[in-house]
Length: 115
Image 1 (cartoon, rainbow, N blue to C red):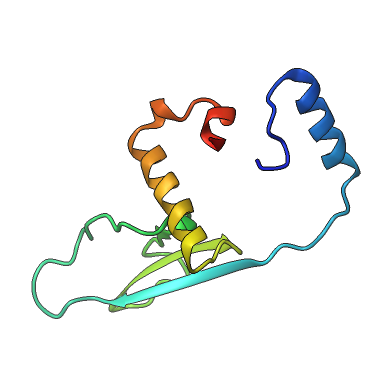
Image 2 (image 1 turned 180 degrees about the vertical axis):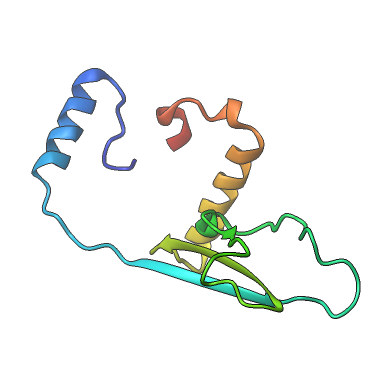
């Protein structure tokens, strides 16, 4: 990350020392249940894969036996950490994430990723 620009052994040890001594803090964590009505007509199972933003990557469909499942709805559960941003920084971060997802071979080195 930004505060750990080097990736050599000493830099990593130094960074881990800072982490070890850091003050613990609460994080902003959200747990989400998303329900969508089942269509009245046409095919509804299986649902085509959803293209969700990276911040919602933990979403998955609940099983029919899950207590959160509601008849007549497709129910998904997931969550995210406070990774919400609007504006230029969000656009740049999401663009970087999307490119890394498409071409992981281009993003193997932390130092070059920061450039």
